[in-house]
Image 1 (cartoon, rainbow, N blue to C red):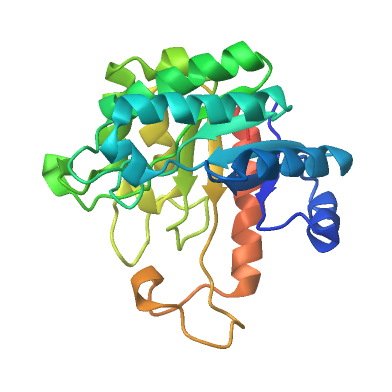
Image 2 (image 1 turned 180 degrees about the vertical axis):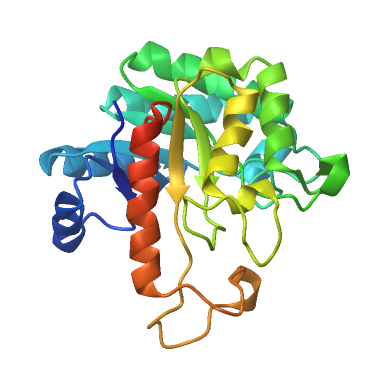
Length: 272
């Protein structure tokens, strides 16, 4: 049941043509709750279906609104995603990288707190459209928080997913969302990264972080990529440049992406 998709900023004719050449059947776009957000989501659903794609909508959490009133905001968020499900969204990712305080209130980051929001949203989605796939918000791959696993500003992704699992998140999802975007080695590699051996650096061990927390559940990559500044005309901003001194070329980027798609398709536990 593996299917390939692309995360796009705009589903225009160029994106549609490239995705069709690549055999992609899904498109992912992000939407933000708030004024005009529902109509924007509906427009994206309509456009994707008109072009022959299924659509995954990543619905970002309003960190400040959540901090002000977690219970009230959960209801607001749930009503928003329910409308998208009712409009025909094929999949909804509940949140984005909720293990870091760029996306979740500082001092409140935990898999249990995230699961509380997930539960309310999931119930609303399933009531509105039981055919909409529910994907957990993929955590940011990181080991920044060291042996402690968590701090005021976030949690390591493996610890966060373990906290989710302990809070019962498996009851509210159809697929475990994960990201893989800091790799600099081919997806077939298990070692050799010049930065070291941390598991989130490697494709297979990144998957293992999800399967160990949620054994037997399908995995959905909602972001997967290899960073290359080749041909961009200016340097990668320093705070985003995790590439080594020998950066990835566009040709390597293409090769690694193709290998990742092939490896994912062959595993049997990757849904998207």
